[in-house]
Image 1 (tube, rainbow, N blue to C red):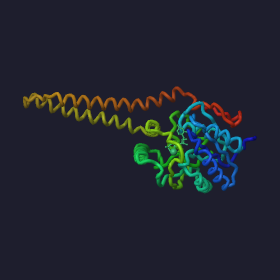
Image 2 (tube, protein in one colour):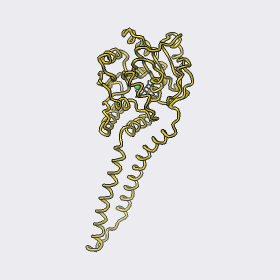
Image 3 (cartoon, rainbow, N blue to C red):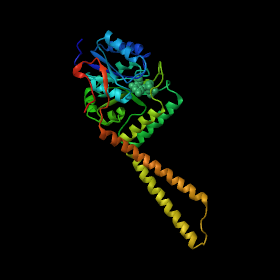
Image 4 (cartoon, helix red, strand yellow):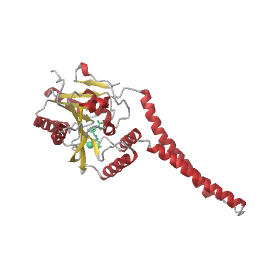
Length: 322
Ligand code: UDP
Ligand code: MG
């Protein structure tokens, strides 16, 4: 089996516990790609799934020689899985799509059409996300708006990683060695001609979300710290404001003591103010800590992911870039 050295389109699917979704996903992806009548490859990145996703991928790989898989040694996270797919793909363009059928494969021909019209990035924007719970919808909406307000990078609203990107964009992404990946921000940062196609986001077909609250917060932090210094500026401003207010209160206390001969007493005011300051200080240290932890991860410069096995062939056996 010889791997096509330059397919017209690569499709990259991060997979974490999607065994039940894979057969339908494969079928619908294949239909969409066959309707385009272009040489293509499908790259599934198994991100340490605990179910039988890998077996399913091995089977698909045997049946169809346009199917490739990369099997991570453990769970490295969604963004890293997509990065591994981008490192390995050879297409003139690549589509990144979730493996849980929340992103409809039938949209790929639409994305490709816009690409042919001369756009290097065609992202799929969620016109609705009926499929997601109330909490997810609200937090996601809030997050995208905070992110947009805090950065000068033009990161599109309500857009996940479901998109088509040109080879140029893939090659530049590979030159961005950051450890805390936030691909949708990185792609926006790169620029080029970007456009969008609207779609309705379905609900996850089988299984549960691989993004529990903790991971979601981590991801949101990566987005903000990677693309904005606003939290640091906010902390500085907060410091200035509190110092100014405290100074006024000190002046008043001194005035009151020496001129009015009324000393301000009270356990309550003491405790409240010291608790307030304590809180603000911890918060500020936390904010700085977030940025320090980014520096730390990048200084350690570990491989982004470890590949345990793949059917990509030896020459493209991907270990981390850099
Ligand atoms: N995913 C992954 N690694 C993870 C979590 C998720 O590769 O640690 C994959 C998952 O299989 C899916 C995509 O990333 O293809 C999006 O994840 P999910 O649907 O769980 O997130 P949600 O849609 O709930 O935000
Ligand atoms: Mg999902």
